[in-house]
Amino acid sequence: MARVKIGLPSTFLFATQLPVRITDLNYGGHLGNDALLSLLHEARVQFLAALGEREVDPATQLGFIMADVAIEYKAEAFYGDVLHVEVGVNDLSKYGFDLVYQVKNQVGKEVARAKTGMLTFDYTTRKLRALPAALAAKIS
Image (tube, rainbow, N blue to C red; front, side, top):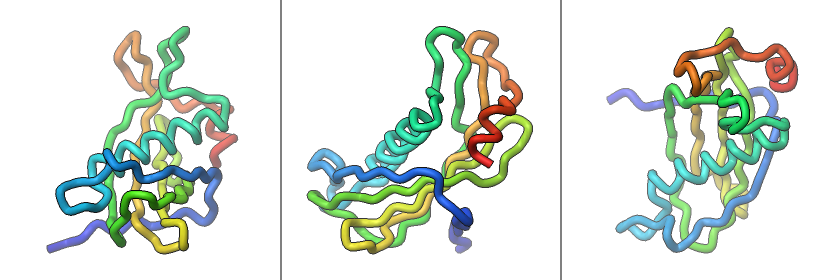
């Protein structure tokens, strides 16, 4: 069976720390896959805010939409762990980019790698829009 392999960017542009909450655990007693995706969402929102961006601007209805996601699990995470999430960018295109995440626990053990394909989107017209040059300059 083929496995997902996520290549890391040469540099990360942002980092944050997020705790594993009791509600993030699954029946196996470790961080659930749905909870990890939610933590990645939080890291993405923080990354965009650091760039002066929002997932959706309520005034203009311009923002981003996720086209795909891939997660490569490396180790378990447990309640009380503090995850260090680094965010970088790969594969800029006319309409978007990939965000790449590396997740480690508080002792530096890699928990996961992930990638979300983000497209710039106009929520009023419900169509893709070109990646703004100013944003491309910030993340390239």
